[in-house]
Image 1 (cartoon, helix red, strand yellow):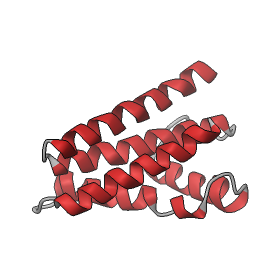
Image 2 (cartoon, helix red, strand yellow):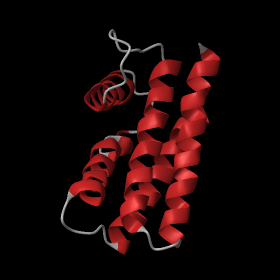
Image 3 (cartoon, one colour):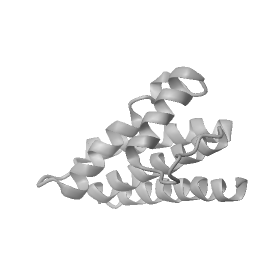
Image 4 (cartoon, helix red, strand yellow):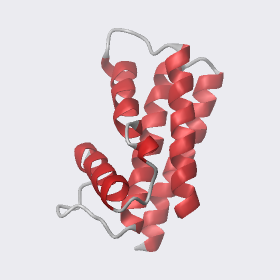
Length: 127
């Protein structure tokens, strides 16, 4: 199962690189989407490494956010409380970039990239 878990980490890193590239090329909506998926997949990796898996086998957005925050941050204290809002903030920004009749601004995209970089760095330190 470790190899399968590693795939999520590799996808997280790939999405972070894509987010950084999209930001540099002023594609802020796409950048926001990639930031969220980098964090989402990194959280799946962290949960898997901690032995936490969904009972139905589906890594749903609500499950991943609740379990990462509830178990790995709040209960086990494996990650800093500073990471607590990262998944929800990047999720909301992704929804703006993908579905809202407005654009993600350069400033919001820059903040999302910084959050995603911090999130992956924290998970990478433990992984």
